Amino acid sequence: MLSIQKKFIKVALALGFLFILFFPIYANAQEQSIQHQIRESQSGETVKLRKGEYKESIVIDKPIHLVGDENVTLIQKGSNPTITINSNNVKIENFNIKHLDTGSKSPAIFINGDNNYLKNIQIDTNSYGIQLDEANYNILSYLNISGDENELIKNRQHGIDLWKSHYNIIHDTTIDHVQDGIYIERSNEIKVYNNTVYQSRYGYHLMFTNNTILEENESYENISGMMIMGTDGTIVKHNILKYNQENVQSLGLLLFDTVNSTITENNIVNNRIGVFIEDASNNKLALNNVQGNYIGIQFKGAENNNIFNNSFVANVVQGQAKESSHNNTNQNYWGDHFGLDITGDKISNLTYKVDPFFLNITNEYPPFQLLFQSPGMVFLEQLIHTPVEQQLIDQSPLMENPLISSNNQSINQVPILLFCISLLIVSILIIYLGVKSNEKI
Image (cartoon, helix red, strand yellow):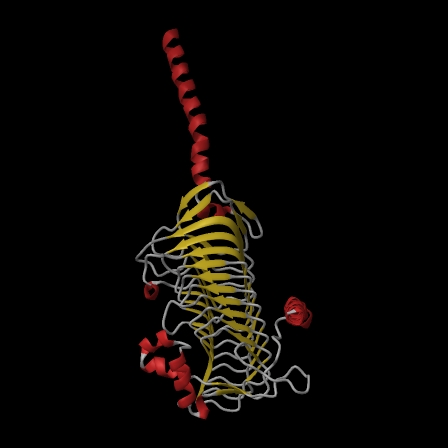
């Protein structure tokens, strides 16, 4: 009997040990469900995620702070958004999202709430990165959103998509291989700054927005850098739009049906078309560097725009105007203009005319592009004049580049001046010594 009791005690102890051993594993399994932790949390509480992979799609419906680290990965489960935010004052940061269901058109993160904050999130997606739907006063920062580089651009979705969402801020975010990097439609008072978009369709795409600010962003190797359409009061400042050449109609910057925009101090370089202004009016473009594009600036159906103090250098065709009128294009710097300043006011007394003859003839006969600046092409350009209404005219072109300070220009001219003086002195010495030699003979 005693031996039976001892055996029973041993079995009980073993079972107790196993219970104690495995109970924490059960608790950890509960903790590894993010949705469970959200349900158990209180409003305003911080939910810290342990490192690991979580295969689930979650819904946040209360104001909490969800935080992980670089070792936390949330993997989409099903066709719903990986994260849905249906609350205000939610903060999520520091983890990775893999939203790779090929049959899903849902975004990795869907936001329908106000005053939410997203930071330090890496998103790999076959669909949208982040969608805001009637969501206001949100901040999206320090994000990385990557689409499927093997997918055709037309089949991709946007990196960040805003619909009727106002007063949002997007900054310090990198987006690649999507359709449009940042797409904003019918949303007002949006600030977009310090972002980079590359290898996508359009870097930044505005549709029917008011008072949007695009500042210190970069867009490169896209079909087009910035597409600004149907907007009022847009500010575009200190952006870099470069190497957007993926299509015959690639653009650095498009202003279409846009009014009252201010475009200043941007670098628009090495694009198919630098700036295209179409059906747009009352916009100001100043102090922009438009360089190395096939076409520098092009107008179509544009009226009453003010283009001044810009630098147009090394563009194959500096500009063209079609069906456009009352645009002020005076006092710009043109790299190929040989000016004459009689009065010393740093403004040329010779008018500069941008004749798009080469553009017109190569549009009709593309192989003629090989003859750029050849003597025959120059002769034809002088012989066959483009209609005046297609010419872009600067009545008072600048003698100096406004983007280079006068001090720098003076400094740059000093070596040239010294070289010329040296040549003059050497020439005088040669002549003098030659005369002396002849006298001796």
